[in-house]
Image (cartoon, rainbow, N blue to C red; front, side, top):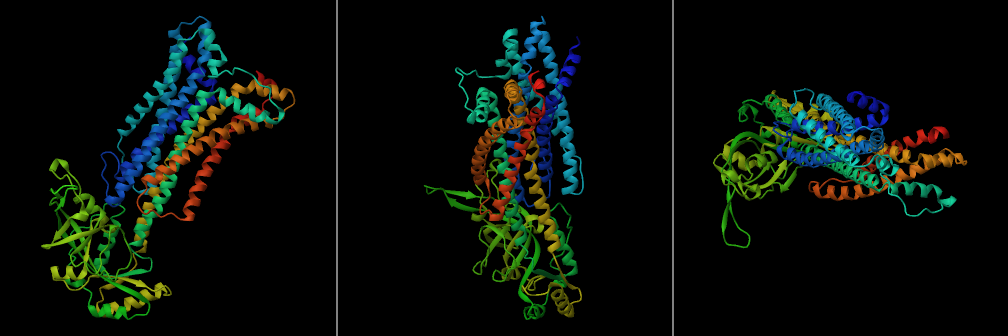
Length: 624
């Protein structure tokens, strides 16, 4: 007998079980590989570079993806260990039968080792292919353009899961090799049963429940493993769905609120195109080139602002002066807690920033701010973007920067120092932005006219008519001034952010599918162990649905216990890792409940499929 032929024939003989094992391995490998590739494209992975999103949002995404990624890998490892262990444990009886026929241990172990290597290799290889195909499809949808991924992730993930599959698959083989032929052929070792000391007579009213619960108790090892496995899966699902939905809604509101939906913008046509580019940098690196923001042709006369303020359709005119400046960090001293010692905070690092002068009393839009935004008393106050905070104000022990806190430091440009009072998230220039008081910026630069106006329309205003009227007024004074609508650009930003969070939320679906396959495999083993009982029940007149009832109770017990544990720990963990001040509404909670309940229902329906097949089989076939 050729060893490879025996392994192939044995695997083909158990087509369904072999397919389920390979599918579980494939999905576990694919989900892990896809996570690495997708996070790398977002700029939060290993050795990645990306200009997508502000550095603050990238850090937030990175923390979430890291946490979910660790869980996906852990679940994948547990799934791999469970399904391979289950597959090889069921070879114990075959091991005993072949030993009884006179084959030496080494030859029998070689047969089953070949099976294990074949299943592990095929499952991992298909997973690598599926992972790269998933990355191709999602990249085309999310980023429109496709660039070759980091290929060395493939061999790394393949080797990791291949070693896991071999390691956990060898354990039951080594255990079986130490058994005698009689022990290995025993149903107790084949099914992993825990024998009961006494047998109780079952009452008719409790027959279904007793048969179901007894089988779970007898298979304590496998039942314990599947409950732990599904609990981890539901923890992952809760964190990814609940945390993902809440984070998606919260971060979208951060971007949307920076430019109110009722707002239109007035600026010179040249500055308009530049401002759109600056706003579009949020969704990827865009070269804005050298641009003279201080060009006198961009200045908006005060008479134009007065005329606009007099229009009944306008709620507010927000005048801003937009410039581009070289900025530098201004460190500070702080007292060490509990002592009188002083320690230097920060350093004198340099960078570039879009500097926007605003009137704190006339602001269109709002920002998510750590600290606070400017008020009328802040003549030398500044609010910096999160990208500046991440790139200039950070600890760097190798350069003796052991403490850095932007809210305790300052920022300097044009020979003026500003105290940082807040850190905001703003898509403009991808977060490399600094807000300062308009009057102060005008005084230090000598530019006393704003170059861009943000106009908030009243609620009852017809937007199209108002834009026409505003355009007529501004072009009376300067034909190069125009009115434009940035809502489409803001929508592109929020759409990419939404798609990114949705992709992260759906990452556990492959893991969930793997867990469902494991549950089906577990139920197949349970039903196979009970088939004699089912045959007797059918022979004495029980209806076909008795098998469905018993299996349904078993599946419900396993799923509900796992769901309860997973949801409890998942909610606690989600609460701990969420960003401050998350947006949670009744609709959000309902959406989370629907997703989790749907996952539970689908897994339950899939788990009773083996019982459905058994119920439809003739009594003689069940007993065979």
